[in-house]
Amino acid sequence: MTHFYSGLRLFYGQIFVLFTVFNLLYLLIVSTITGNSGYNFLVWNLFLGFLPYLIVIVLKLYTDRLNLLWLLFGSFIWLLFYPNTSKTGL
Image: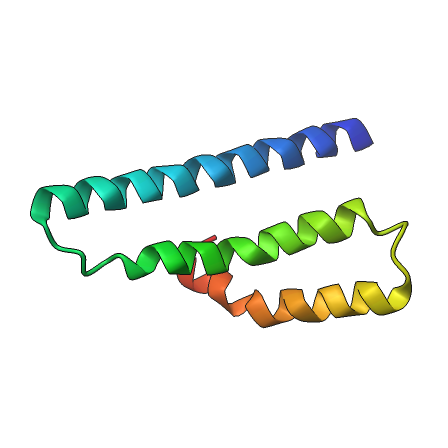
């Protein structure tokens, strides 16, 4: 059963990256065609929304090697960036 869930996580991660790239390409095309750079803040918002995902990946990879203090610190940093995920729809 563990093998199925690990493959599912990889699948969701690939879809996550695919949609992020799609959003960036869409933003680039729209701002090039219209000449309007009013939505360029979305690049920064996507980056801030991506940070909790990266933090979770790092914490998951190094959970067995981290002591409790580093794990709590990483969780606190994750919690600081978590509100940005709801704004970006991640």
